[in-house]
Amino acid sequence: MMGWFLLFSNFIGGGVRSIVCLFLIFRLLSTQKPGKKSIAAVLGGAAVISIVFSVTGLPDYYRMILETVLIVVCAGYFQEADTRMSLFVGIFYEIAVSFWQFLLAAWLGVIFRSPAFLSSETGNGQIAAWCLYLLLIAFLWYLWKHPHIEGKEAFRFASVIALAGFFAAVTLSEQKILTIADDTLDMWTLLSVVLMVFVLVFNMNRQYQVEKELAKLKSEQAELLERDYTTLNNAYAINAKLFHDFHNHIGALRQLLLHSKTEEAMQYLDELQTPVREMTDTVWTGDETVDYLINSKAVTAEENGIEYQVQAEFPRHTNLRSADLCAILGNLLDNALEAAKQIPAPEQRFIQLTIRRINQMLIIKVENSFFTPPIQQDGTLKTSKDGKGLHGWGLKSAQTAAEKYDGMVQTSYDDNRFRVVATLSYQCVSVE
Image (tube, rainbow, N blue to C red):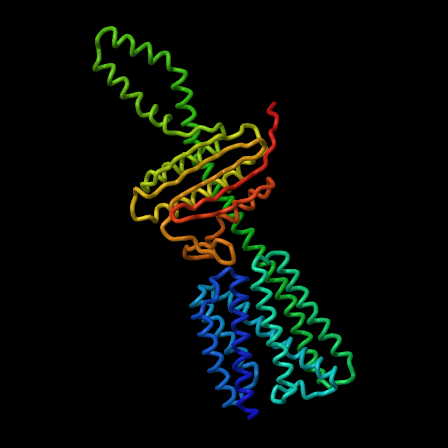
């Protein structure tokens, strides 16, 4: 009877451990949320591993290896997680779970003065194991109820758990009730230090990736502006030249028409038509960065058969930095173009950009049609592009830029219209 219970307990434990790790990978690596298929796969794998170990009696570290492989395969196949990072998380997760299982068993043995808690083959040992399973389920519930824990808050939370484990291991070595081999205590104490280092390294890696993506984005924006700055200056030069030479053009046309040279007058107008048309179609707000972004995206929209409408009222001489405007306008318009051009019917493709100032508040609203509804996970929009490590930073970058001006970026959508609104507080600056 005890053999069947141990088999059932090992299966439940393996399933709980694996499912919690899949959700941890989902939260740490921003992958897809574990679905029914991935959960069924890890439960099936846990059942096979439990049967194999009940028959062969292999040591526990083989179980850790097999569970890690199972988790990495399921995360990579069903959640499209990066194999290297999911393996990194899976290994240290298994170490942490085994470490806390040992701590729970040891401290229960100390409290109840029974070494039987250290053996998973006994009833007391199973009580310690099920205490761990309940803690893992509580941890999973906490992750589910707090979907927005990330960054510094997540780092603090993980650090508290790692430090608690370290102090529990150190304190355990001072107790005299339960006899535990010095080698065993030294091993788990060392592993507790390794786990603390893992938390630190993982946090540093996440910060590095965020800074790398933002630096890459700023570099691309700088290159974009530098590459096309000449084009923008040429456009302004054409505008100035047209106005400067306006009376000359009128005089030349008047002389041609006075002498009934209609054909020559038409040719003269044809020569002026191209720059005049370009200037008519160009949006001028008075800010070179905004002008360039709006008009360059208009060219892209025309190339993709997208109706592009702009209503812009932009304040002059403010504390709004060009780099931040690039991050907001550029990313919002790029996302809109990407979504609109996926619609099969060209007549249904549209983008509407509205820029309004209300007192000391700048409102940037971008509306566009879309074909596939946006993907939402825990109330947050997720990218649907391949290569998630390189995508999905557009709205984050826009949000980061907006927060510099006590602003925010909000999104909404209905049946055929996606809407994103960025609000920024600005201050007027004097120009000497």
